Image (cartoon, rainbow, N blue to C red; front, side, top):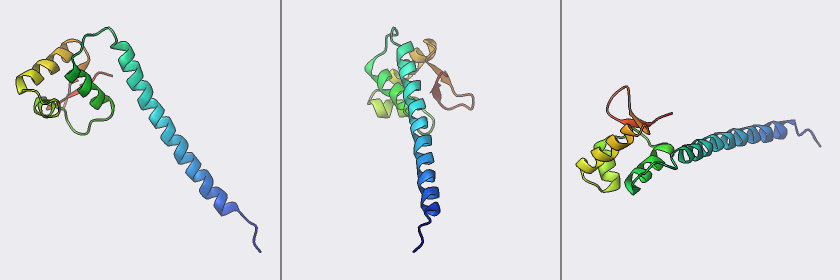
Length: 106
C-alpha cells in the first residue's frame, strides 16, 4: 500500500493558489469600483450614466460608443451623446486614444 500523498498535495496547493489569485483579482475590481463611486459621490449623474458606468467598471467588452450606449440604455443617439459628453466634461470618461470609444478615467 502506497501512502505517498505528494501528488495529491501538489494538486491541492495548485488549486488553492488559483483560488487565491482569483480572490485577489475580484477584490481589486471591487475596490476599484467602490473607490470610483466614493469619489463620484458628489457628482450629479442620471440613471443611464450610472448604468453605463457600472457596466464599464464591471469590465464592458469592446469599445463603448454612442450607438452602443443608446442601445443598452434605450435612449436616442442624441441623448446618448449628451450623456457621454457630460461625463467627459466631468472628467469621469475619456476618449480612447485609439479612437471609437470611451473609457472610465483611471
